[in-house]
Length: 453
Image (cartoon, rainbow, N blue to C red):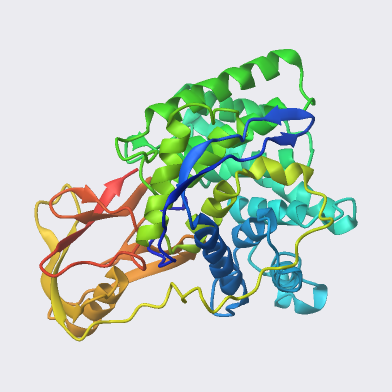
């Protein structure tokens, strides 16, 4: 399955009066990446950003949370650190991604991470300045190259133009190898260039901004790598230009790129490619800060993509990290509330839950579900299972974006058929959050629709 774009809300301190903030210019691979983005940021932004930083640090210490290399990358790209806690989290990541022989499951059947997870882990290792010329380091690089080779083969198979996972994960894999300074098979790069040129970065027939932005970051890194022949570099440079132009065109009147949850990666791309002088950059940053203040970010994956942006950085900055003279000043500040704690209300609300399986005109399920106010959509699904009157069933799969709905009423989503369970607010508004993050309102109708993507 490809990773869905999901997020939710985080409650952080309010912003006060505006002041001017200018990000410093970052240098990557001997080339200037324009990350100077003069924008109006309300006074108090330092406290706001620190609380986001602190919340990610708190998540890294929560043993009930899914281990996420992206959280570690965000903590490492920050200006403030808790070096001991970061080291502890890195060790926990290593225990999962590099298990010793004694900790492996019997028969060597331990599940291997997919392309995206492995790529994020390699980004985390580079952010920690780990030596990749060890046996284990070389094995990890080889494994990711193998993943990309298999993805490439799937794209070429019968000309279907689709990788095993998604172009998001494919792009992330290319970016991770590039950040480590590894030369990538030109056929792997060419497949990504072809996908960009033929507008393959879509989901449900619409542009996937986060996929486009991730591919743009990969292209931007490759462009600066000094490892490829001029003709290929020229093609990569054209792709960078097309991607950034398309991202700028995707900006809404509210300042977001696509939606608010795809905007952090989009702004990372603008920072990495020197597009920050464009008026779209400060407008986008204002939208992100406004949404952060209003409490629209809680999903750890999106939070971890946002924090580097607020420090004026992108994933390309990982390539030149030296891990020296770092400020060991970040603490679990009690002034920052535990933002991800949801308190259910005493009032009961009614949510209409509908299951559709086109082309059948009949609904598989259509009933009113009562839950406490503040409940998530996942709470609604759980209640539907418990109360009947008809037998409602569903299945989920854990992802770094949270639980992904994979089956409803026995009907399973399929990568091969490229169908998934779409979450809609009636009659046809696609939800921007996942089942664990979205909180339905009283009287709302939610449709689970089996749809192509």
